[in-house]
Image (cartoon, rainbow over all chains, first blue to last red; front, side):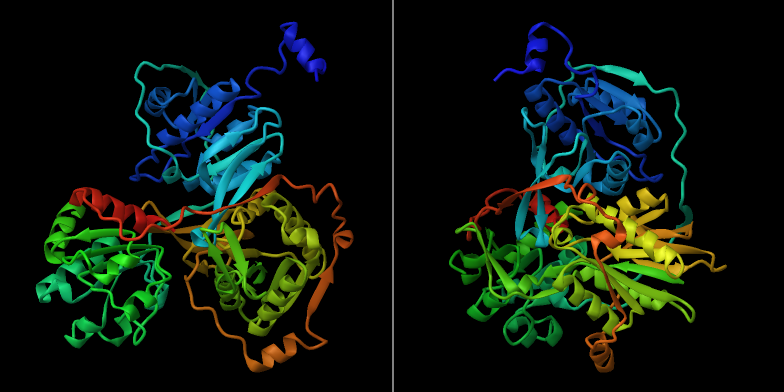
Length: 327
Length: 261
C-alpha cells in the first residue's frame, strides 16, 4: 500500500518538520544542593539505540555544560542547557521524552501539560513501533509479582524509566554533538519552601513481617562474635536482624525475631540467611521472600534448596569479607 | 480543613498467585481491598481534619470502588463520592486524573472547594502513582510525593511535609491548596468501629454516586492514552545456584537487591 505521504517521501519532500520526531532525554532537574546528579548514561544509550532504529536525533536536556559534554559521549546529538526542563520542552514539540524514574513527578507534570500518555517507573528495554510510533515499555505491579506490557499511543509520548532496568554502557569519546544554548531561561517557580533538615523517626517500629530486608542468623555463626557480624551487616543494609529456632535457644534474639512456624513468617525483598541450616519449618516461613541469599559451610545444607544465591563458605569469614566490601 | 482523599480498590495480593512457569495469574478469590498507601492517606486526612473540617473520600469505578468508599466511611470519613463508570475501573493515569479534576470542580461548587487533596504514593496494581502530580499540574497546585509526615504550618495557612531527598529528611512548606501523596507505612491506619461499619453499609450512608454524564465527562475524555498489551512474568526462579565471585561482587548484588522494591 502506498499513500500520499510515501509518494511525497519518494519525491524527496520533507515529511515532517525536523525536530518533531526526535527523542529527548531529560537528565535534570537540578538535584538539591549537595546531592549528586543522577547518572542517566544508560537512558541516553537506550535513546541512541531507539533513534538509530527509527532514524532520528537524540536531544539531551541538561543542567550544565559539563553534563552536556558527558551526554554527547553517550550518544546525544544535541544538548540543551536549561533551568526549567518541563516548560522548555513544552515549547519544543518533541515526540518522545524520557525522564529518569527519580523524576517521575516532573514527568507526570510534563505529560499532563502536554496532554501525553506516560509510563511511570518504566522497565526497559523500551520499544518504538516504526509504523504506529507507539512507545512500549513494561511496568512492575504488586511489587514485582508480574509486569504490565504498556504502550503510549498519544502523539507525544513520555516515559519515566528505571535506570536499574537498563544495561550499563561505556562512553564513546569520539561521539560529539552541538550545544544548543537555550538563552538562560528562568528556573521554574518554586511552590515549596525548604525549611531545612528534618528529624524524622517512624511513629512505630514496623513488624518483622513487613520488613523489606532481613538478615537472619543461624547456628552456623558459631559464637556471639559471629552474631555481632550479622547484626553489623543488617545495619549496613538497612535490614532487620532475625534468627532461626537455634539462635533463639541461645538467647541471641527474642520471640518476635524468630523466623519459623513457631515464630514469624516473612516475605521481604531480600533475605540473607547467615549460618542458617534451613529446616523445613524455617524454609516454609520464608517462602514469600523475593531474593534469598544463603551462606553456610555445608554444601548440602537444606537452606540452599530455597536460595537464589548459594554461598558455600564459613559464615563468619564470609560476613567479615562482606562487611569490608560494604564499608 | 476541607480534605479530599483519592481511593482505589485493588485486588488483594493474597487472593491470587502468579505461576511463572505456566506464565499465568491464578485468581483464587474475588477479594479486593483499599490500596495500602491510600489507607495511609486516609489516616492523614482524618488526623488533619480538625473540628470544623471535612474529609471527602472519592473513587472511580464500580462495586469494588464503592466498597472501598464504604470502608472509608466506616473508618471516619464524612462523606464519599463515587464516579460510577466501568471504563474508569481500568483507565490509565491521564483519564483518571481528568475524571478526578472534573469531580473536584463539582465538589467545589457543592459545599466548598477542597483545600488539600491526598492520595497514596503508590498504586499496587497499576501505573497510577502519576495521578497525583497530574492533578497538581492540571490545577496549578503544589505537589509533594512520598510524604512521610504532614501537618499544618504554625499559622494554619499552609501545609508542611517531611520528605526524603537524596538520603536525608527535609521539611518543606507550601501554601494551600495542595496535592500530596502519602508514603506507604508512614502511619498506622485506624480500624473501623463496629458502629461505623453498620452505618457505612446502611441505606442512609453519606455516599453519593455520580455518573460520567453528571460530570459532563464525554467519551472523548475517556479515550485512553495508554494501551495495555498483556502481562510479562519475571524469569522462573532457579534455586541453589552456587556463587563463586568475590566478596565485593556479592556486596554489590546485596545492595542492588536491597534497593529493589
